[in-house]
Image 1 (tube, rainbow, N blue to C red):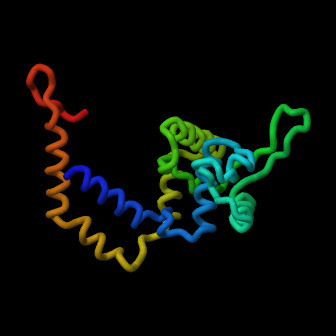
Image 2 (image 1 turned 90 degrees about the vertical axis):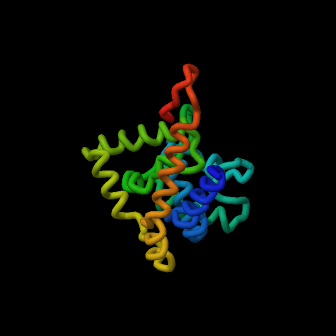
Image 3 (image 1 turned 30 degrees about the horizontal axis):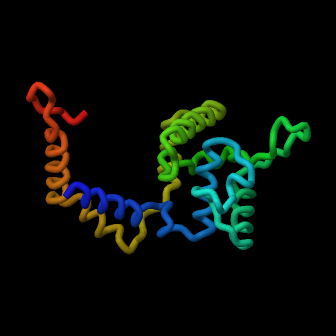
Length: 188
C-alpha cells in the first residue's frame, strides 16, 4: 500500500509540477534543465549537449541544438578558453537566473544537490541577499497551477479523509520497526 501511495504522490507531482515535461514546452524544458545543470558549476558545451550522456539537456537533432543554443544565450554567459590550455571554454549561469534554480532537481545526485545549495548561498552573499529573499522571490515567480484542476485538486488536498489517511500511514511507518530491546522505534 505504501508503494502505491508513493507512486500516486510521484504521479501527482509530475502532473502538477510547474517544471515537468507535462507542463512545459520543449524550449522551456531545455532552458529549465540547462539552468539546473549550470547551477552545479560552469559547463562546456559538449557536457550540456552530448546526446550519449544520460542526463543531456537536449537530443541529437540539429533543431534541438538550436534550442539549446537559444537557451544558453538566455540563461548563461560564455567565457572563452584561455588559449594556454589552463581553462576551457565554459558557460556560466547568469546572476539573474539563480532564482529559477531548484536545488532538489530530480536528476541531481546528493552531492550535486549539496553543491547547488552552496552555489545558491554564494550567489546570495554576492548580492547581499538572504535565503529568505531567495525563497520569497522564487515563490512569487512560480506559475500558478493549471486552471483546469486547481480548484478540484485543492479540495482533494484539504479533505479530511485524505489527511486522515496520510496521518495513519505516517503513524504506521513511525512505529513499524521495533528496536533491539523490544521498544518501538520512533521512525528517525
